[in-house]
Image 1 (cartoon, helix red, strand yellow):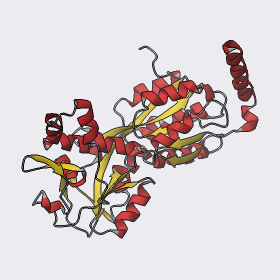
Image 2 (cartoon, rainbow, N blue to C red):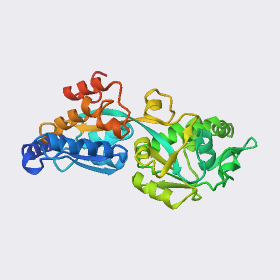
Image 3 (tube, rainbow, N blue to C red):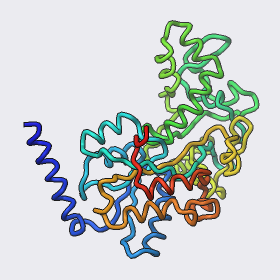
Image 4 (tube, one colour):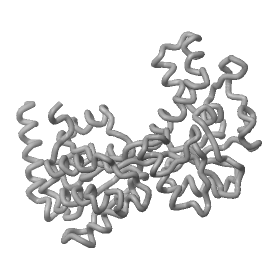
Length: 346
């Protein structure tokens, strides 16, 4: 019975592939709202410079994009997933269960996570990871004890911060940005303040303490944003005291309304990220369904165009928009040209 099912599945995929040109002739992309503007720039330029239709690029978040990507092989499924984090093992497993077994991972460059606020609002100009943890964690250290977070103003725990109500708009859990925010800001602050050590001293296992460190308060002072950065920007516009979490490129394109804070004494710039100095940065990716190459017209050409020196290099349009060019871009170009899938050579 199993062999019969496999044969039927293989025949179904082959049948879909044979009729692909008639079913769909444009590349379909979905995923990260951080990667969205870069992918849109490339898609528009691709449509203008190649004899292929302009790729369709949608947002929805890294997790949602990868979920769609992993739903199967065939023209009814997306060809590329954009992600502001690396694909997870459970997602690779979900892909494989649906026949998506050959995945090409493409790193396009780097981006920074910044904390920004109204340009004329309170002087949120300098944070460290401990400040964000003390503001947003459900339990914090006060006088050497781990207690329910009593802080209502930033100045409650750091006299150098404004005497303003705590309100932060952070990326929702389906966004790749959330994972970076948790790992490089909240978790780092948990450890730096001694909260993690206190949790373990109280009997938590290290794994449980690590999970607890990533939690945020639920009393309305930390607000998840499930949409893209434009929704966060609208929330900041409507709340003078608030801070928001953005990608560096989005901030740099909204400096007329936003001001940015340093993190651990480092200003977020393309230069500080490229040098590895800014502590809250992350690589950006897209993932290609190899089974669709040669089936969906222009798929490989679009991927090669995306990572070309002219587009993703330090002098290309993506760098002008805020992407930090990958020093190993040449290796990525070779990998895309060779259609090297994840796991090869391991």
